Amino acid sequence: MQLGWSRVQSGLFAQTSQSRETSVLLNRSGRIRGHGISRCRTVKAQASIPEPLLVDDEPRSKLKLERLTASYDDSTLKPSNGVTRHVFTVERWGAHRSTGRYWRHLRGIFSSATFKNLLPPIAYLTAASAVLCTYQELVQAHELPAWCPLLHLSDLPFESTNFALSLLLVFRTDASYARWVEALDVWSTVRNTSKKFIRDSACWVRDQALQALLMKWTIAFCKSLEVFVTTQSSTNLRQALAEVLTEREAQHVVAARCAPHYCLHVLTEIVNRAAISELREEKMLEGISTLNSAVGASEKLMRYPIPLSYTRHTSRFMLLWLGFLPGAMWDDLHWLCVPVTAVMAFLLLGIEEIGVQIEEPFTRLPLQDFTDDIRADISQIYGSMDDVHDLVTAS
Image 1 (cartoon, rainbow, N blue to C red):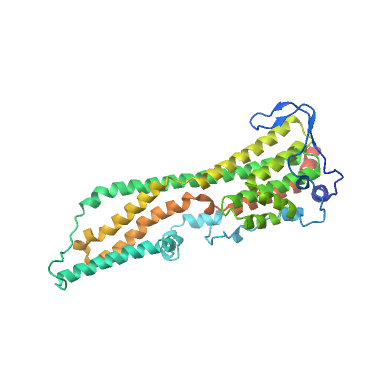
Image 2 (cartoon, rainbow, N blue to C red):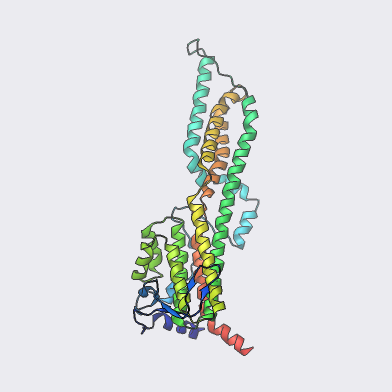
């Protein structure tokens, strides 16, 4: 196993004798179906990726294999916005199913993110209810002019529209949850495809330098996709790539219009340079094509929300419905309208708030866990290459 690490490290950091004018030899004709990659018959095509990105000419640089494949403790994952998103373990699932969750969740109402986000509208509706109750009391005590009427609202409008309110909330949560599931599926595909791509390259690509390049650019792709769907900040992207790429390589990625696509472009060029069979090359290019589809799906979820008219109408419906509700409850509850309105506002607005939050799923998913898991598995794959080879040979 130690020999395997040395073999990959030597390929990653070895000085190359290739010149900057090295070109790619393409000796098969036609097009690879489904990838759109043109091939000329036994011609040399100039590489479209800058040569410094494909050749490690800084063998003593900070780019080290141990840093590329470092594993992380899941318990230390902290998202940038401060919201805790746990990655469940067996113990976590046990606590999640425990009936003690009712009291635990009840105690955490006032510290929950949902309550904090809803505090302004809840305070507004509660204050409106208190103003209404004060007005009713003053009218009944004859403290206001005689022309001020006592307000009485029938509960018939609320009984007639509560089904519409239910449909609005159900559609909101269902549509948002579907987007969350789609985002989870996309990143599961990225994780599984990346692992398979690296495993195939470890077995098929014999050039250790190209193996190391495939490894680090696969990690760079995952890091750049994480930043692309969360912050799209060039500063964050540069920081994420600092532990994976050299400064010169990171500058090329940061300058690209779409960093994940640029990383896939580099991976495609590396595969083209590998001396592997046409069938194996096509299999690896299929993996790159799958990752490209994942980028497109992520971009779709990030750029195109649920129609805004639906979100606006739901918010207006909820505020008006809850705003007039104290007038229908006064005759039965009197001053109890105030706490009842606050509780109902939290419960109903909370459903809509959760739907809005998960509508943009990438800030709610533990994407760092996905990327760290990919790095850990890449470490395991490359670290066990010699062991796997010896086991198969001995058999």
